[in-house]
Amino acid sequence: MRKKIVAANWKMNLNLEEGKSLVDGILAGLPALTETKQVVIAPPFVHLAQTAQQLQGKANITLAAQNCYSEASGAYTGEISASMVKSVGAGNVIIGHSERREYFKESDALLAKKTSQALENGLRVIFCCGEPLEIRDADTQNEFVEAQIKAGLFHLTAEELKNVVIAYEPIWAIGTGRTASSQQAQDMHAHIRNVVAAQYGKEVADDTSILYGGSCKPSNAAELFSCPDVDGGLIGGASLKADEFLGIINAMMSC
Ligand code: PEP
Image 1 (cartoon, protein in one colour):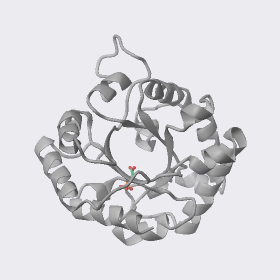
Image 2 (cartoon, protein in one colour; image 1 turned 180 degrees about the vertical axis):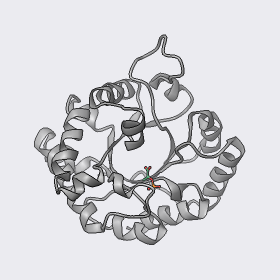
Image 3 (cartoon, protein in one colour; image 1 turned 90 degrees about the vertical axis):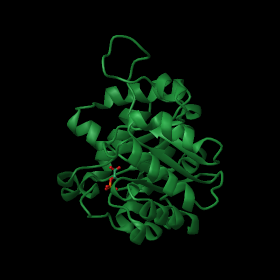
Image 4 (cartoon, protein in one colour; image 1 turned 135 degrees about the vertical axis):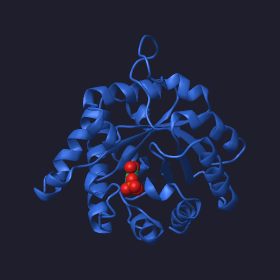
């Protein structure tokens, strides 16, 4: 059965102390999660060890890195490998966030390598895709996102794809306060699931969690997460305050 997931992406925010109290606040109000209703926290790298300790022994709330490198080890100053991420206690990694694609010029080919590297090291990948505004305005978002999925994921086996969660994040909705309507989200999620089904079969596609990201907040989360193909959310701004993030988690619990 496919999982519903709410994942926090802190981006480059919060110092260690602030991160610690945010996680304490989330844990204090956390509802009883299950195997099929999970939470993921993706703080910056320097928080990972501390957050791992805070989450130790807690069921169905796991840790993610926001990125990892495409090579296993070596002379790549400033980079962090997938095995390092795994060794600090994180079980997930976000790959291909639109900010990585745009500001750090991460190509589809690099993201495909990062995805393989992460999976080889036992991490679950949260693979991001999503179109910029001009593509949405031209009504070519389906083709655009399909190309990102094919380029980033279709080198994987069906077995490998079981450890991939897809996050659809229309760039025009990220951090802008402008959310995709639940119909726009549902249409794209259904399209992504069809794209996955065409390559890997319906069973694999039906088991793949597809998260929505982009100005998701407690007031719109339940409507978005009630769409049949929307399996939760990747949350930026609203994940930085415990009460807001808990509101979104509770929306998932009620769907
Ligand atoms: C994100 O960056 O993944 C995101 C969805 O951000 P926000 O929720 O702030 O739009």
